[in-house]
Amino acid sequence: MNKLYMGIDIGSISTKGVIIDEYDNIMASSYIYTEGNPIGAVKQVVKNMREEIDTDNYKVVSVGTTGSARKLIGTMLDATTIKNEITAHAIGTIRFYPDVRTIFEIGGQDSKITLVNNGIVTDYAMNTLCAAGTGAFISSLAKRLDVKIEDVAKVAFSSKNKVNIAARCTVFAESDLIHKIQAGYKKEDIIAGVCRAIATNYINNVAKGKKIQTPIVFNGGVSKNAAVVKAFEEITGEKIIVNKNSHLMGAIGIAIMARDSKEERVFDFDIDNYNIETRIASCGRCANNCEIVTVYKNNDLIDHWGNRCEKGNEIKNV
Image (cartoon, rainbow, N blue to C red; front, side, top):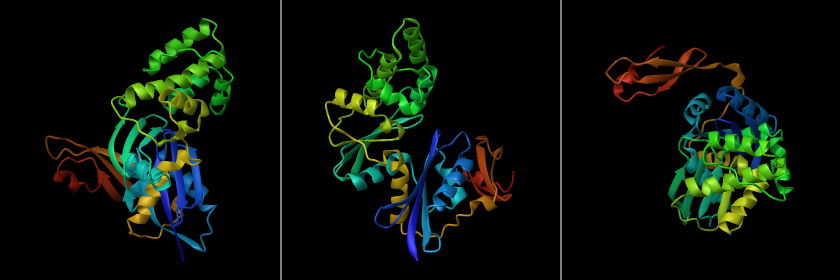
């Protein structure tokens, strides 16, 4: 039996999956929009990847999950490894770029910077409450300008005079965008300004106070926007490395971690045959009154979390 290892990265905007072999070769991958349904998205990602694998000769023996819904999906898939995305992105990046010092990562609704020294994460930071400067931010402004998200970079590169966009806040940025449109600025100049603002906002806020050192690797969906990459290079004065699988790096990292854990359980791809349901309940067993998330597989309780004391462990059914 040839062993394979699966990594799933579940974000608020997109869900990514990869299956790797023991040499880090990607045997299958899938990237789709989460659309507010992480369970459904993961089922589709797993289905997509199964079609790329010869399941008669290969078996997935470890599964890792990361991202905002990592606990839920980890329970659903009986994952051997569940870790945060900072760690997953770092592990994936270091495997391909052992001398990396700085990792930029911009996803659908969050942005992160991770500092690395000799293969060890030494510091990190992420955006706080606002999604300004993220993939959702670009998508929203591009939609208002009637530009397809995949065409943003091409339109930006056609600009001769990019304009300044106030991108520190999503609401202010949209107001500024409307003002620029009404003032007669060209669409391509506004788009170029938005791409520049993404990089500026990141450097001034997410990376504020951090010592950016080379090599710099850029991960996440926004890294596929060449105009944003160019803006980062202009601002930092440094070469920005973008891997061909930069949008999958979190999934790759958690797959590597699942493999390296040495814990193995053969994965059953046929997850459509069971129903996964979450229910929410107030514990009520003490003054904390914790909100407990319970997960059911075909009406059987398989996991729960959210309790701040041992009394929450008494949850049996909701």
